[in-house]
Length: 235
Image (cartoon, rainbow, N blue to C red; front, side, top):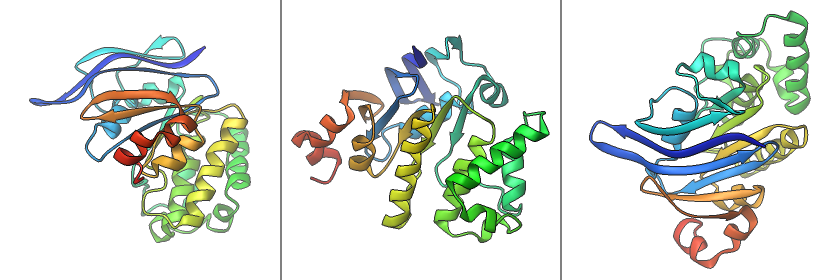
């Protein structure tokens, strides 16, 4: 079953046609990656799916229902975005950021349980609980950003450049975490500058250029495609 279905999506910024009729789907329990050069429109797609940017045409369905018009309604429907460059509440503590991620949830015990789950994924956050998020390292901030999204108990997780600017060891930690949460039943749509690694862990991938999809297929196959390697993966 499609957790996420996008058909003929168009997005404009004034006269700029940033996303031009893209169609794709993400099945329940899949990891799907969107790969492309800077400015291709990857983040615009993610912000549109999160309800922050309005589309100018097309169909988006989350778990079989039309995309709501407001970001908080999108979260309530079961989709959460981990934005590029984290966008944490830097003056708030780790604990306060996590609680903000659960703002739509009313059951205090479930919120506490979800927080414990985040600590299992990223034990360092328990040690940093009372620390202001703006003082964390880049890797710790990314762990917190992912955890904040998970606090809402989403069915679909959107990850926009989750390893941007991180050290190689932390990059691998993030990738392993994505695989782990997928194993637990999460559906993941991933935009990632580390294109090779993203495609390697993905069930399927899409290559985006200038707002259009040029190619799609199984992620590992795209990662090995010489043409794709030369154009997008530094091969």
